[in-house]
Amino acid sequence: MKAKNYALFFESIDKNTPLKEYAKFFDLNAKFKDPFHEVKGLQNIFRVFLNMYKKLDEPKFKVDEIVENRNIAYIKWTFSFKFKKEKDIQNFEGVSRVIFNSDDKVILHEDFWDAASNLYEKLPVISLLIKFVKRKIND
Image (tube, rainbow, N blue to C red; front, side, top):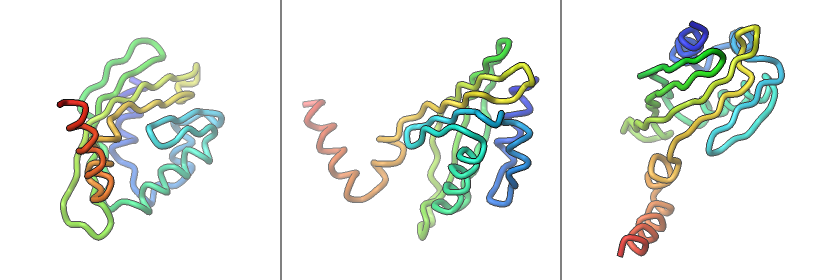
């Protein structure tokens, strides 16, 4: 149940979601980790998401699947967004490993997704380098 509520929170957040809403789900000393960040503390987690909303247009999470066992949940999601000044919507899938404390608040949120193929390959200069390296590996 706690994972379902947490997933609904993630589907509903946007750039206007206040810190007090995050505080309902995250422990004050929670840790958040993804391919770009590793932060500790509610304030820092909040900043990660504020920054995402500043750098991307229309970011949105859609939860596809939840597996929960006691205090650990795995949440499969699809993330959609647009790069600033671009019209095409980008999508990619990932999985979050979430650990809850005895108060049902998140103490660890760790995201797993492929940053290389989901983001870097979509950036003009970097994509050429990644494609070159992939060709070399596959030849």
